[in-house]
Amino acid sequence: QQFASHITPSVQRVVEFAKRVPGFCELSQDDQLILIKVGFFELWLSHASRLSTDTTITFSDGSFITRQQLELMYDSEFVASMFEFTISFNALLLTDTELGLFSAVVLLSPDRPSVTDIKAIEHHQDRLIEALKLQMSRTAGGADRPSSLEKMPQLRALGSKHALMLDWPRLNWDKLRLPPLFAEIFDIPKSDEDLQ
Image (cartoon, rainbow, N blue to C red; front, side, top):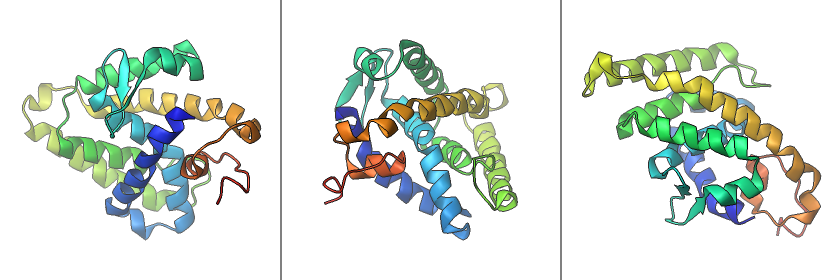
């Protein structure tokens, strides 16, 4: 529940970011909602990587969660994979522009379940991938630098695993007091009391 309250402010930031991604607002509202909900954890983790060490993840408000605390919520294998990703992603030393482009590519993934306008999403993502490649080629290290796109499969695997781990809170929502926005982004039912 504490983790949920710390991650909730990031939901609004992801929504604001999404609205600025070229092509995103041209998509149907249903597709926009699906892309944000399904991609949220991956987007959050990519940004949280910048404030991570091998033992903590720091939230945007300066508070942090330790590896041990995360292991109480998730299995240790998943947490190890999270930290492995954050450390290796952080080692890429992406500029703000590169991180923004990478995040836009993650957001506009045409293979998300239930999206309808796959062609439009694919078109916008392809343009963002080209922009990211160009931007990375212009930054120090250029062609010799590993591409952030190589991290996509690892990030997507973490996102899929995280989605499966949400089954417990979805089944036990009545025992939890979760912030409404957190419950909304992860499709966890809420009691009427939580909605007020």
